[in-house]
Length: 639
Image (tube, rainbow, N blue to C red; front, side, top):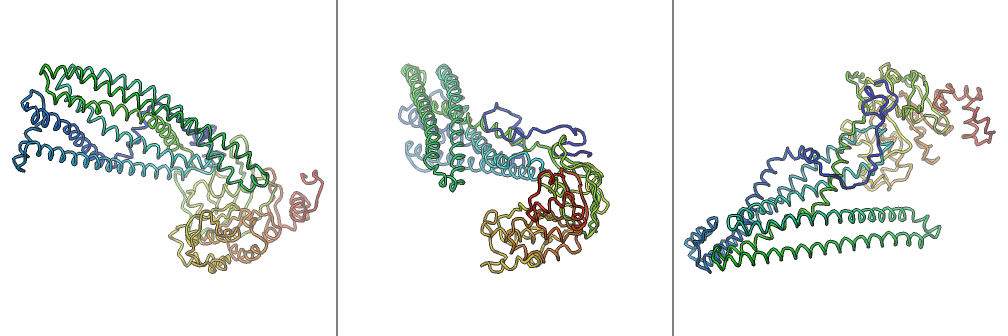
């Protein structure tokens, strides 16, 4: 491994390479059609290919029936029954024979049986279309569920160095909004499939009826397509402006609502309302622009369809008068015009969705291909069932960025069961030291040892199981109090979780709750006080029974009364465990066996509280400044 930074996907081979995390800050914009992305999406569809094949089969049959419906009206009813020309030299696809058979079976007239035939085909056709849409949507939703699961699993495995540089909201956008954009794309492809199959079937029938008239109509199709393409390119820019203004509205609204107290205290209501009104007006203008363009496009396409019908009536009507084609065939052409034009309109509707989804697909696969991770050993070492708890740092140098070390040549031995307090000014590397113990970042081999074993040779999950960490910034999950203590660990029974809560005196407030340990907690535990949430964090670590305990300013957010409650519990907790305490409170530090003083990432002093006070060095200065609040000359504080 031999690297000092975790910001690299392959630290062994490319130790100097830096990843560009800024791509996660990019907004969604249209990208070119990329068939490679579509091919990759099909990897998640493949396990559900049988249902997908069934859906395609259903739409093929339904499309065939959709084409036969106009044939029943034109060739059976108009030509066969009304015009008495059933033998016209034009295809009827067996509909006349089917109608005659149905009339004989049901004992109905030809016209009545034609109505029954048309009604039956209509019901069956729409039933098949419904089953197609349901099965296709089920296939796509299941595939995207699997994709979302894989993406979430992948992002769970990204190291702390990744989330140091990437906003969580950007990752959430990929798992939620971008996946939804893909669903809209796949749903649109299913809709196109249902439109283009009748397009080609109708085209084949029209060529069979009248080649010349069909060619005249086909000349209009490219015109429709080109106009649609230019229109959608124009609306693409407008809809992008609409999305931007909606984003600005949401951002402005969130800022004002979350900071409402500041807004009201500073009398900014009118000013903020003016800003919001301006953004809102811009959004309205863009929305109106889009409406004008959409209605104009719709009116133009309707007129073009009417012009196509005029061509059919002009040319087809003339052929019908000369008896070269039947009247029913002319009417059949008018029925098929919609089947020729509708796919182009649907394709135009899917244009913006397609290119927006391509951008989403690019962002999703960028995240899936992001290789940054904490390196795991190729030949992991198995730790004993119970550790002694000896820790050693040997000439450890580490930096979050390769060229900016935070820790410099740190060497330290912590004996089993020892309580070590770590103090130092802000930015001295205290929290960095314990984050390395949790294997949240990569560091050089042979620099950190646990019971004499190189920490890099132990899987990170095994290390984290043996080391319990209570941060100042801890997280409470939605769920019950018991869930937040056990964290779903099957090795932690209900009895063990309750005993852990009792050890830190958390049972005193839990048992007063209406549902006790089964009381549900809201987001981030907002229905508990800060001190109560902190006690849960202690109980959570104790329930896991780690051999090494790390408290990173864990009592900084607790009031004095609550801290007194847990001080005695902490003494019992730390008994027999190697403990590292990062704290600013004098009582916690005085009870430690030794005190480590860090400054600018270097070990400055190490000894007991009394020894360091007698030394009158950095620790003495920090003690005077922070604990006894005695003002000293700034130059002395830097000594």
